[in-house]
Image (cartoon, rainbow, N blue to C red; front, side, top):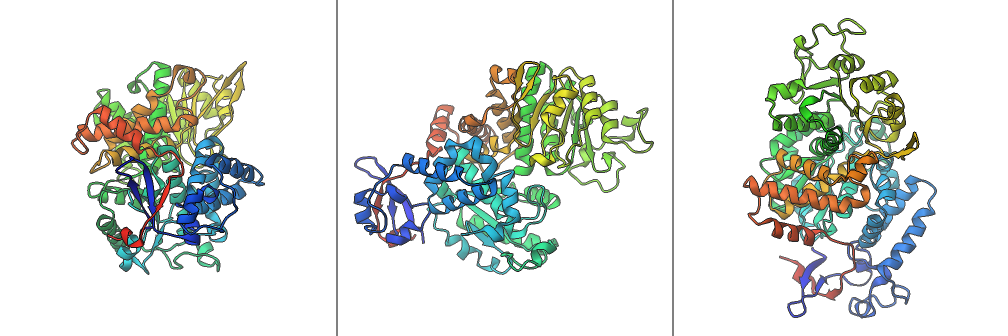
Length: 577
């Protein structure tokens, strides 16, 4: 049963919640609980008298109290547990606290701390969030989705927990990722928390550590594979379509082969996207666009070396290819500008085991004819950087120090302003640090990283670095797709998002070394991305045919700011329907 409904007073125009819970049940609902902010009138009408101290606090008072408690915690894991507890008690307070302290708290509610939390989720969980769908209950998928107490679900973030960050198969403990992503949709994009649902598709785990752990809370069986897995997913998708028409699905942290399969299978049937592929690609391409503005050079004059051709690497390659083709190159010419390196070295057309998404970027043997190689018959990363004349180097490998001094120095020889994207996180797995890249290139490198790094002092100036965080893209893409009622989320929408994001970077920010906007402008970035996505949906015939001024007003209205709504008592039967 729904716990409340959005209402507008027809006489005064006041927005309020019609609430169907009373007393302690109301205080136990994190989306409705206002803590000490319930007015005396609400306390009387909603059977709250005597259930809390007499004082009435503002949201600002509660934020001050919560921030003080947060900063008393001894380490980031304890801070994560505190914030998760706050989210489970008072969502409006949580989002206001997070929105006011994004720089400080995003690394705690999401990467890198969320990875540590997921590794221990069965031990630190105090209250489950979202829904868990497993082979045991997939037959009841309609009942599960109908039991969600949110007024109207518009966004679903779903994972099967098989490839959580760089940590691998965490099974049901991977639910921390959709919960974290929903938090960022709200704080950065402005989606209302009452519209967002995290989902764990708990199809088992192959991690012996979890199967043998008596405290593990997930479905304690080996993972579904093959046709049974895809049958399960089909039932899930059909359940979503029946119960949440008009909603958007984000696929999150699936294993590589399944991620591409699911994206291609369902993207035309249900508005959906994969942030690990498309969001990463769009964010990296936005940083590269800014770098080209600094270099005053087109993409077609660059040679791109991408290391790690999984979901993220392929997404980046696809984005670069599209930008090269916009500059007039053919598909084949664009692919030949991109040198894809994986564990075995440069991908060649005769490399065994090439995956479908990797094949366009596999180089012909003729491309390396005459190259001087460190070891005959093997084309390693250093060989590619030197022989291809790389001007852009991007890594998504989770291999600490992969970009060593020799490779970085060679990048400095290849280009006056080499572009280096060390995109792995957490910090301990970064391909190189900004300081190492600056030292090897004489301070000339243009840098973005996957983990946050403090500015570096270089020859009397402070050099800053953008964190190439998908947070800059996915909330705005989701918001734009939803407000435009897009029937699909296309690659062209992500390209539009990249351009809008890069355009926000000012000359002053570029002079300081930034390739993306600053985190404090994340709401502005989400607005710009949402507008670009909604425009593209309109022009492609996939979204609402409304003018820009109307789109801007709709997006601004949709960006929820955390505040306590007034409540009015309603009858439970009013929630049914």
